Image 1 (tube, rainbow, N blue to C red):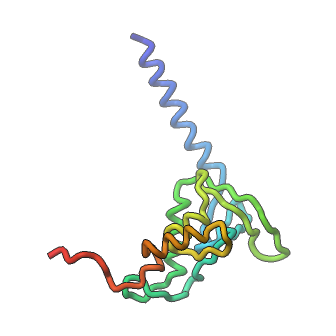
Image 2: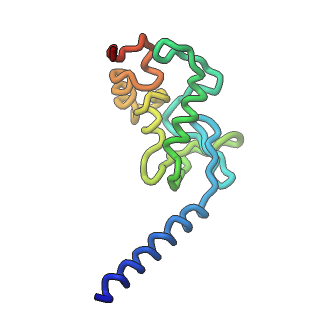
Image 3: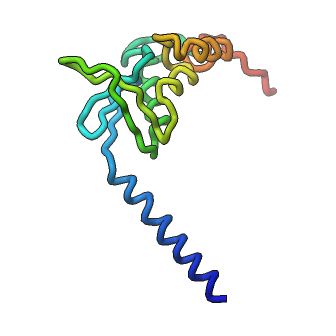
Length: 150
């Protein structure tokens, strides 16, 4: 009978300690829909092109700041996640081009899948086609195609 409470206490202690270790491991700032600052180093997501802040596009029949929405999408993809970036190309100036993962999820793929980035290389080309066909994100220019709920 004492075995169950002891196991429960061990599980609670190990679970509560784990998130604290991960929370202190990094400082992440989403700069725009394609760039993150991870522990003081700026990384640009490889293989994609994202609308810049202030770039207007039509979404569901409305003009929107698609750069701002793309940034919000990247914030959503990284919320509460441990982000890891591996450099692909290091330039003299500007952010490091990298493949970045949030808890193992490819952020470039996520941005293209949700319709807030163009595929800049063949890796994400089919994903962009699927996003366009599904009219996700900036690929849904309108008109509003939702059924009338009267």
